[in-house]
Length: 295
Length: 295
Image (cartoon, rainbow over all chains, first blue to last red; front, side, top):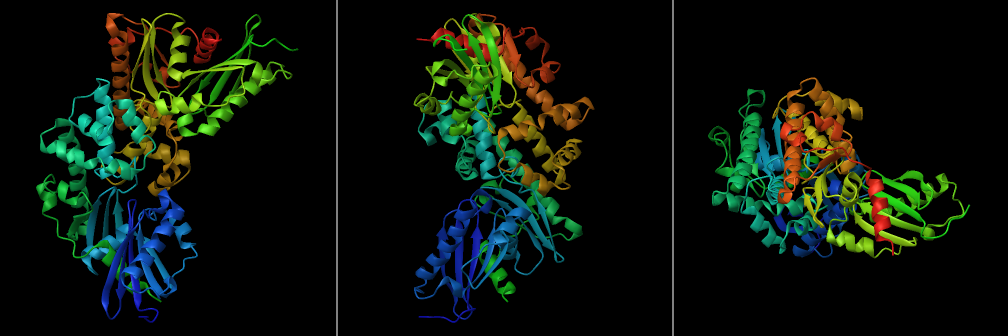
């Protein structure tokens, strides 16, 4: 089957780990979803362009639209990394293959997805972390400066702090933690310098894979892991409360991302009181963005 | 003039910032010293090979030995990064242009330089940080796992912790520090995202350049800077005391590297009591190593 141009929309949610595309027809509704590789232009510009195209092509294939070409798609993309002005500019110069390509941040589409056209805020906690709010036609960002100096509480942050703790203990400069065995087992190595070889120069996504060990260790009252989770949860609680109170608006806040559920029980009760469930996914926010921007 | 082979030795001290070569003639003594670019193979393998050759060539030129070729040199090189087994192996496979090329770690040559042929220990604190001891024909290393997860107290660590503190304060998630103005001025920018653009993906040497601002701020009682310097100094004090007490040997410890003097006043008195001055430089240790290894 073949559809007319400007009726096919794709919402793209691109981040450090993967690129999610949702294909939507203005009359038939959702057609398919597809996933391709990483799409954070800060950590790989060409790879991001490839991932966006691959995810769109895959979504078309999965929808059976094998005769439809990319130049019939109106794409709305929310990408990590384009909060940096230089990166946004570089992305906007892309000679993309689509009918239209509308660019915004991953935060913006996540907030649109979570709250629709209403004012509201999100805290993302996955590989990275960040707070974002849309309020009275403005937006506010908190945190999210990137790994390894920012993105506190994120999976990459937890993974690196766990690794630091293991190295300090190995040198008898920090307390013992079951994280030592968990990391050695995970990488199938027997000593600390081998761990260093596994993790040296690795991207944030590799550190984020270690986050689950910190939650596992905390569940058995490992003191090092407990301290890290509490430090992360305190930071997230602060973010939530600040976003909620912007301009005295009492904004609803949705916590999303791979670690949202794991952190929930550790959040401050006053932060929990600000929370709502996200209505829709970031990809749906990206679709909403594509439709609102189409020319 | 032209000298016979096996009489010309070069000691190389290679690190993340520069490669220092010292040229020595077995009868005439020291001939020249020269500096080339970075020589940490972990952060640039080919660049390291280039830096080593360039520094040797420069040293020959400065000594007026323009007719002498690299294949007449017996080189002893102590390099950062080759404590990783895979990196050491890769370096050893180098088809080098010298008569002989003897490889060891930057720690080993620094310890040889500091204590000659005697047992002793060093704590290096410059761009990176590490402890190392030679005792009873054995060696012990503490710390030095690399940036950004290890190398606590180092210049790169201080720089990154300062940057983290600035970002947290900007989001009202941490106390104010004069480091904010110092960093903005240093990079000649006006807001935090511009700082992120300056520092994202930068190597440890760029972070280490910020360390002096932390000491400056601490000297005016900036609380954030004081806390960082104290945390760094406590770590270094621990390292010194542990190295001193290895096997009950009361090893003399020399603190060397670009931040050694800056940290001195902040060290614990019990750590200060273990300290001696380094006798010679790491380059001289590398020369000593080259001479002891020549075949």
